[in-house]
Structures are given as structure tokens and as C-alpha cells.
Length: 228
Image (cartoon, rainbow, N blue to C red; front, top):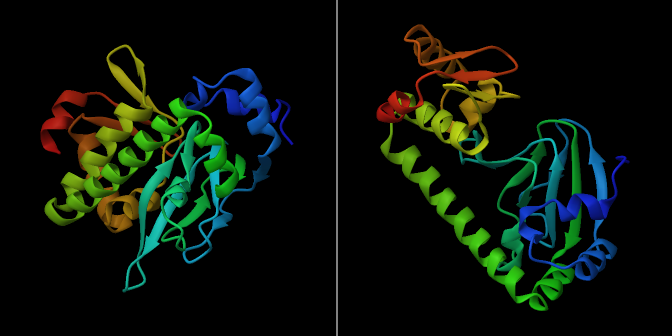
């Protein structure tokens, strides 16, 4: 178990900024926290949609499997983010798979307990509604990219948005660390690993980016935006 308390982790989620201390202690009492090893399943498609998760450490990928058996990453969950939240509005089965990409620290709460908690905290209810709307919009954008953009545009768009959301600005450059494997990017952009490697290599040769197995550096974000 991690050194810091479950309450400390929950309080450091932006989602709970407006919740007072006594309510946070109540939330702590109805959540569980666990460490999950790298590349382990958290839930499967068709599992009951009855739990909501808060990711404190590590990364989680949400994937779906096509009729052809191809895996597509529909979302990448980073520390401080929630997943499984669709269960609040959907009593059906899971439609995706959740798998750790790193060693993860995760808080979990039953859907019924969380719905009851949210109902007694109107401001939090609004934030959850916004979160669900944002996540559904992101899913819609992902589908549009898969339909209307070619492989190069999809990879560039993915890198661009990843840099905006999770990059660290140092001088005139943006650093992303840890970076994803080429296979992960392929699954996120519906490309082959070889295609991703070719596109990234071409972008590096043109001076847009630099990368190794652990990090990605973006030199020309505005110019990269024009290519997506």
C-alpha cells in the first residue's frame, strides 16, 4: 500500500475541490484503494457496470475490440482522472476493457454508493455531468478522426492533443514523459506499428519532434497543428 492515505489521494482530485472535509471523510469510508501491477486487467467488456474508478498513479488504457479482432484504444487515463463513470447513467454491461499500462494506484467505489454521495453534493453532481459530457465528446471526436483522417493526420493529431493535455513546457519545447510505445500509439490511432514508426521518424527528420523510448520532445507545436 502507498505511503499516503486514501483520503489524501482523493482530496487531490480536481473533481473533489468543492467538497468539504467531512464529506471527503465520508467518501473515504466507502472507497477501497489498491495497487495494480503493469499490464493487468481492471475490468472486461460485458462485465457488470457497477464500479467507478479514480486513478492516482500510473496510466490505464480503455480499449474496444473490432469485429475483425483488432484492438483500438478509445481513451488513455492519466493520474487524477476518473474512469468507469459511464456506469452512472448506464445500468448495462461494460463496452470496453480497462488495462494498466504501468503499475497503478486506483481507488474504487460502487456505483450505488457514489450516486448516493453525488446526490447529496449538488456541485459535485454538476461536475460529474460535465465529466460525462466531456468524455462522450472525446469519444465522438475519436470516431470522426478514424473516419475522416488518414494515418499521418491521426498520429499527428494524437501527438498534438497529448502535448496540450499532458506535456510540460520547458523553454520553447514541450516534453512528454513517460512516452507511449509505438504499439500503444498504433492502437490509439488505428494504424500499424510500422506506420507509426515511419510517421514519427519522418517528423523527427523534419525537425518537428525528437523522441526515444522514454520521452517525446515537440519543437514546433504550432507548425505541427497545421498538419493535423
